[in-house]
Image (cartoon, rainbow over all chains, first blue to last red; front, side, top):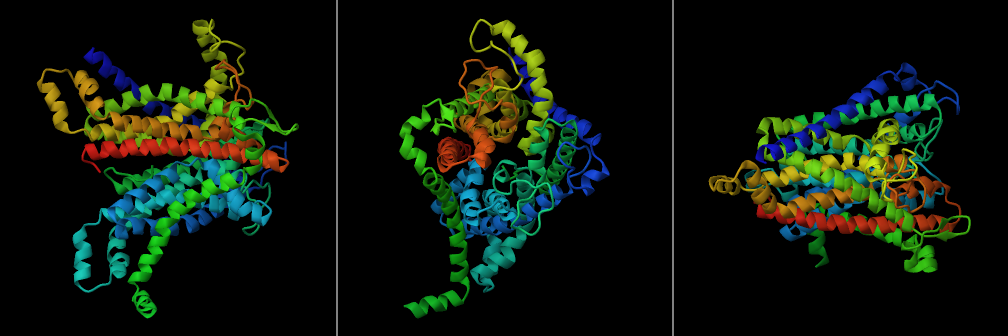
Length: 272
Length: 311
């Protein structure tokens, strides 16, 4: 009984890890044979025609992530500072709880929010709307990380600074935050990596675009939405390109993820 | 009075406090705003259909008749299937990592399994379409039909896409969450609990099953509810493999539809206010459902963390 059950748990762990290797292996197998230079340099070919690339989607994703960082990081960072440095214990618990709930809101619902706040007033789909949707998703991730790493800074550091006559906000800005900066930056990178793969909130905010998207107010292509569109299309060549896009996207996301986690070393990662 | 306030504001500290406070409160504001906007933008179908919206089967945009029952059914059943598969598997893996594996091995495996959580949903959908859908049609559906074909649940035509396929993809997607949260909860169980059990002559498994797991019960349930919250709101992978047919069928092989999937598919095509707002109301139902599940899950996890002295 003992050995059998313990063996079973080992089998479960093997299956879980095996799934990971299968998924990554299959992705590399399908994606590597589909990747080519055109993928990074050409616009999508006309519907039904073979060839072309996704350069507009790569740039589109970069623009969306820039906006997401501009929206999500300041809000999340300052909220994290409030929870860790200013709030009472009870308020901290309540705000942390609210942050966790916000983190659990389905991404498609965030898309509806961005639609009604940005797309409806503007009257059309845009890069801005997609960026704001992703930015809102980044807020709870950034809050959690900022707050956790700020709390890990020893109180003696704060006391030393205050004892030297520094104001509270100077202490926070010049002593506490720099001491936690590595962890906070890592959290932000993990947050960006997570929203980089989000598709659902972009479907009816940034929409898609087969051409270049100029400025910030036109609909834009993005890698995740392109993967979705191409993967569900009837054309073999589009499906091939979906694999290429998936490989590129996963490579970037996992590099940021593993890199961030290793940088943080032991354990305790906050971007869940 | 006013001068004193301004003076305090000028020295920076009050200013910094107010700025931080307003951003802290923005968390509440954003969460509230989501609920408010969803409620405000679903007024038409709420007035027209009332509560029957939740129980009506018809989804006919042409006739302006909308009922969310097939989507609610699809979301609940696929999520339940995902839990049935992922909870034993993830729980087993977490027990192995927390109770048996050497610390260093466990750390590496946890890192790997958490990487699984970072793979975007749309990529799971792509792999699901390429691997799982044909595998379901050719191997898994026929095999299940041989075993349970006499029930309505495991019989009927097989298309590859369908409720069961979506449930399995969801299981893979929530697996890392279950492993990592259950592992964390188990590790937080004090060492002396295990030692006491072993000293009384319990085997390793008996100590795990009869002492450690019951001690961490609240946290384990928290992990399960957290995973359920994820599964309910999961959009892209489900949209790609569930078949997108708004019907309720007893067969697990049959194509279905989920709340998130219908929003993803039809939002940009919705013509007319009633149609669009009916989709928003589905979003509202999904939002309320996930909020309740997550609120419950977080409380359970908080309670265990306290008890285990983690905080």
